[in-house]
Length: 223
Image (tube, one colour):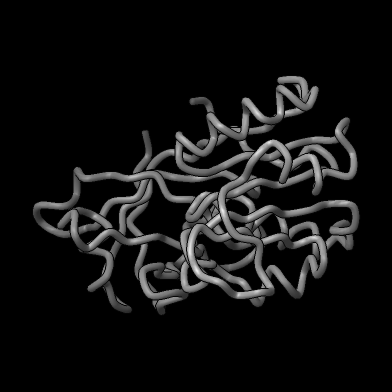
């Protein structure tokens, strides 16, 4: 298990509780869009507190980028990351992840579950292969939508938002149901990319099964 100590180059808040962190890229470091690494903070008391975070940049870029949802109330790693600034250091370990692009389909994300899809969409954009893909993105409220403008510019009408709260007319409201999926899936035989909180994932998997989607069509992290 090789450790890489990387320097923080820049940080900024993407939403009220989501932080983007850019670090320098070790020589020879490579990953596939959708993959993640274990990250810890190179500071006393935090070096062994590794957490999995997904790369949200393209593999051929000169820097590495993470987009991380923070939980200040937990007083843990993500809360500590809120105070991270340029010049601080992180420790990266193994690269892992089962999520990778395997053909056109429907991406279904909940909250921070969007992060494995960001690099995939960036790669598809670069390759001019976005057409035919759709994103269904579930969040608690409008303020929680990560990279809304970017995703809208990439996907347009194929970017479907559903919110648990609020009454904004431009968004769907409620939770992802079987009927909701049925109404927004154009090709039931395509690929389905899933990432989100376990309760949501379990519900969506059941809905997809009821609609006739086979396990071989589903790309997700091992649960």
